[in-house]
Image (cartoon, rainbow, N blue to C red):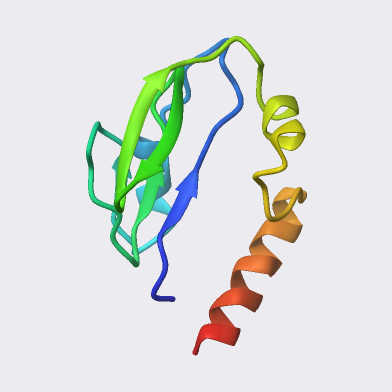
Length: 101
């Protein structure tokens, strides 16, 4: 699709190992985000547990997790383009990819 997919998991009680599970269901490379990892298209990036994610100059920056929990803090920040269900997220990604082509 020519874009990066970034999964920011909101479950903090139990660490989720999506970076180990998702490669079974996609041909795209799946990477656990590390500090200063460069964003690349056609890859799936997964945030590590208990970290806030920022993007600066095309690289991921990991910060200690803040006190406002997701997703409420993200919605309240007005920095989001969409607030969608998982099914609607998939539809929106396809729509955006089709518009870019």
